[in-house]
View 1 (cartoon, each protein chain N blue to C red):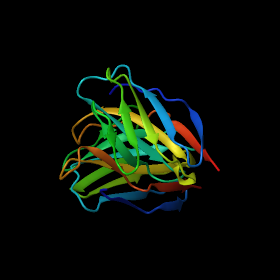
View 2 (view 1 turned 90 degrees about the horizontal axis):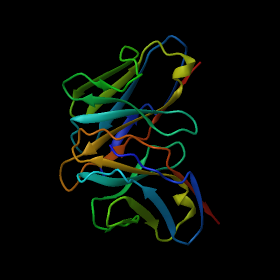
View 3 (view 1 turned 180 degrees about the horizontal axis):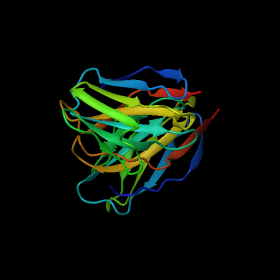
Length: 118
Length: 111
């Protein structure tokens, strides 16, 4: 299947610092990517839809100034957690739906980024 | 997107078929049924999808009822590596369409 990568796979930071997470589609172009957050023993929660060349669309309750999303190219979206606090500690996962080639909108996910804020 | 209902957990003996049900009674005509699974601490993995007809691939089979209000994912010979949370999702086509996850079914494959 199509491959989505994330970097870093895990990060530990101090409270108040900002952390950037990268999401890349390795073998396809993604005009739209999605960012999810997952707390322990819970399901994935959609945070925002990242659109190439335009502003992201945030889900209700997600602070756009806190979670900055940039989708500057067809293969890269970044999520920056600004002024991180311990409650932002979570598993962050990106994904993209593939519409080209033999695919039919299947969604492929990155391996996730484990963020721990001390 | 239509809402789905899945049992919270299921057990299956290793080597036996695992049948995971999903109810999606409010599915609309242009919505597909997608199945994903998430092994602990990993990103979800695409398994299979379908619209009306039953589908099979190297990982699983998908059986969709004629009225499309429910479906069953079948893992023909479950292995310990199939232990995961399985998510059934209905979504219309279009790469921009967002996908929201329910609580899924925790499948435990027992030796």
